Length: 479
Ligand SMILES: [Zn+2]
Image (cartoon, rainbow, N blue to C red; front, side):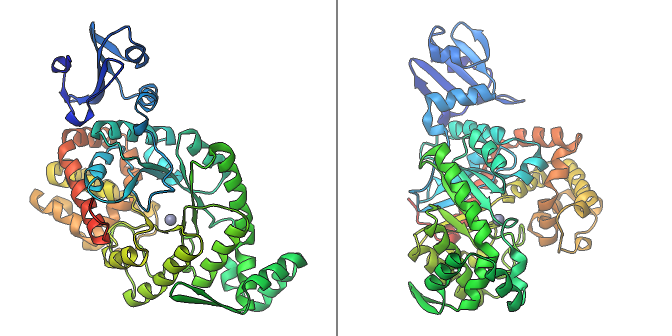
């Protein structure tokens, strides 16, 4: 071992040996890198690209080629299908920096992280590719020495060409967003219009659907689904086309990955909550088409706004969520998936207990907000710059319901008062939605990543703490 000669600090959890070559992650003041020591003639030593520092010591950058080499020699660094894992948590690391903190929390719980999880929109906002998202995760998994397996989710994908990009990057989970291919508007059509559209379907399809679902009281667990013929006709008009597309995507995934993938069906990005009858219809029709899916994300009642707790009637949420959980458990045993799930502490006890922990929970931007918290705590000058950029750009972003005027002027605030903004709903939402403009700003981007490198330990700890709160309130059993 020549690791004492490494020009930087080696992460103790990252030291592994293969074929007589020791490989570890290290950092100096500027960056992270890999170091290899061992026989320079060994194929392992040679396969990693980098710079020879002395005869038996190589410094290797965190490049795509070296991520591929890590996956080859240490297969536990590559993402896998999580079909057989009961509780999975989507981590959604927009920065390529949060996985170490996520792992530090989740390794104590009976749950598996989907460490890499990004939508096309997030890639666009952060200027990353699926390849980079996966590679960043590979390096952090290696750094943490986490060998329990993890997932990678091409999130909210709508087209096969985008799915192919995620698959090519080695992402085993695909979240198929059916919001555009389903006919959501038909949810509000008058019955006459529904009936007219339904009548255009071929006679066999109509008969099969009505025979399967109409005028039956169907017992699923403790719940009863009561579907009349009018509802069946409405579901057919709303979903059949989307379900056929789901079948096409499923066949595509199977041809590419055998059974080593997780398909999530997502209908959550619509305006009205998914009725239990509709959920039942969708699950039944996916199964009739032979589509094996790992999880399904309905749109739940109430508001799942970014960065803040659940807004809505908790008793009604509990009542409806119970039915969704009963359908998932009894109609195929897939996981209920809860999107925009970070910080929804008020509904966690229900979500955890009613699914019996057979669930997928997606968090996304919350690890970004924890990064902003670190900046607010340690670099007030940079925080104010980011805050002002957020104020200048939020109008171009998603609709914001929070009243920005409540936040106050950051220039008039003492440095010590800035971190408290991360507890304030309005400021949280403002900074949550403006990650794109902040990260793409040519001045702020390097300042931000330099600061994050400097405060790496603080960030790991704040993510760990925040995630631990999520897992414990959800009721995930400890290991
Ligand atoms: Zn979603």
